[in-house]
Length: 219
Image (cartoon, rainbow, N blue to C red; front, side, top):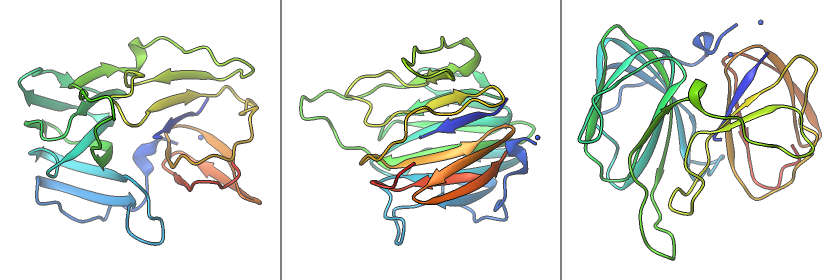
């Protein structure tokens, strides 16, 4: 049954295409593919990256003013920050607020999906804090009218300006709601096979596929 990472694994997402990517200034021994970007024609308000870290690969933090969410698809990463020195494995995740000092290393290599965006403080003030967890340990959230399983990976408060969900579908299950909204979504198929509607077109999807959902597009 295929969970879908919504920013919001048939094969697994380790077969993800496009990893003959580029190097980033803040990383070493890693290749990164920009699959969703603020650049035209997408004009997204966030960046979605797939990062393949080699043995001993490191990341030394986020760009200035950017918040970052890291989800481990395969392998392990060792965190180094004031709040954690934990080893994160497959399906674990961490959120790093803007201007937060941290680093992580992949002792034996890892495949990650990363979401970044420039942080915009909420009108009421305050700011988010470092957050980490394991998808397996999170409870399922009730979804009235729906039958799939849903987990929220970030606290649901205004201090966190975006949501990260894991959606788990049994064979034959689907979303009951057909949406047209202003949100921008970046999806990664983690396991299995599926069918996705964008506008008036239908696309077959498999593990490793990335889906960009622009605002006001029927989905």
